[in-house]
Length: 270
Length: 270
Image 1 (cartoon, one colour):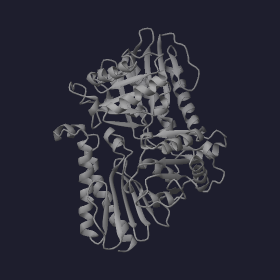
Image 2 (cartoon, rainbow over the protein chains, first blue to last red):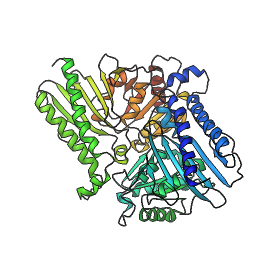
Image 3 (cartoon, rainbow over the protein chains, first blue to last red):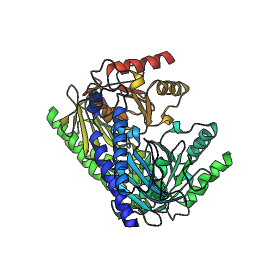
Image 4 (tube, chains in turn purple, brown):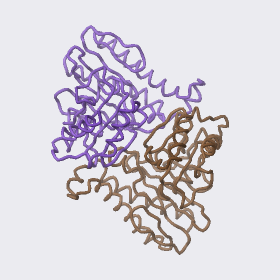
């Protein structure tokens, strides 16, 4: 499949999942109507239905590709390519009616460990980020400018540190590193999920950003890699190595200088 | 001033502050142009300019009323009424370009300790909540339904607990209470500021909500009181007493049953 066709397919995946997700947003009555004991079932159902719609589309239009997904069984690949799907990243935000969750759609060549493209789709606000390896990331088809990307004088003491929740830091080592970075950075903000990463890529922030997370799955970050890298940001694991499907600890930064400083904090802790 | 005129004035305050705040949202270049060392200055400037516009309007249209505000000096009251202003509640969200901050506008009769009205204005998403003492809270002029308000079988183990950040729990007692509630509730989500409270009032959530916060100022919660109470939710301090201008510890819940259960957790800890 040519790259343009691949991008069009990724956009169609975002369209079909977005339509389904919007039907369940801020609809607590649906929850009552399901009459299922599991109280988060409306979220789980939206997640599953959106994923199924994407899997159905892929089985028609890209049957040679594999699928790695949040809700169901993975599907093996004949082409070496895998679609990596997370229908609702930011489940807690979605469940509260906050429009800062996202559908993550990545495409990776696992033989080469290269992420070909990534989409973050926010269907309520109609915001769609598209990152393509080697190209400038776009938001709703407009190229993004991360004004911090080439800043060489950035310092952690002027940066905003974000993590979705402190509860994701499980081991003593993880807690110590997170606490140390919180002490060094100007400000720490929790919450955000994928929206932290697209904020970093978009250069929206009033100060450069560092994102420190752990306990993530491949489908939580695969799509974010080309989106971050496509505006000059950096995203690696906590030792500075490229991410792969086994990674769980993520470090992202608005530019390489901040990334190196954060790596030094981690290294000095170990 | 008649109530209708008072509401109209409150809406005008939301209009003028919203116009100013929107100009600075997701504009990191303004930050660079300010050439001020303080890196969060764009946020501070928007905060100050929005507050000044509201203070100017009040000095023209309600010179007899006092003002309690985040950024500047308080202004004393001849009428006994005070406008309680927080131009940008959710500074960290605003600074990251997340449209889930809010402008809080409360009007209180401090002699009677009654909050007459409260507005939360989200100017980017064009969402405006209006709570008026004794009336049903409205979002963009539509009455809200909190479907959990009359639920008598709610339990903490089915509820979502939210706090803007765990860093707001400072004393050992506060940390112990927050940790205990996190263990009892189904899910804990951080981030959110005023948006947690309007989500609770709006009944958006897929499960009933409990909000536990500390280290707040009067302008952080005054406007939220009639908004929460106007859809059957409960908002008090950690001992269950009505909030006043000295309160710093806040407990809100989707209904009285959950509120009592959360109070019991706090009481049993002490």
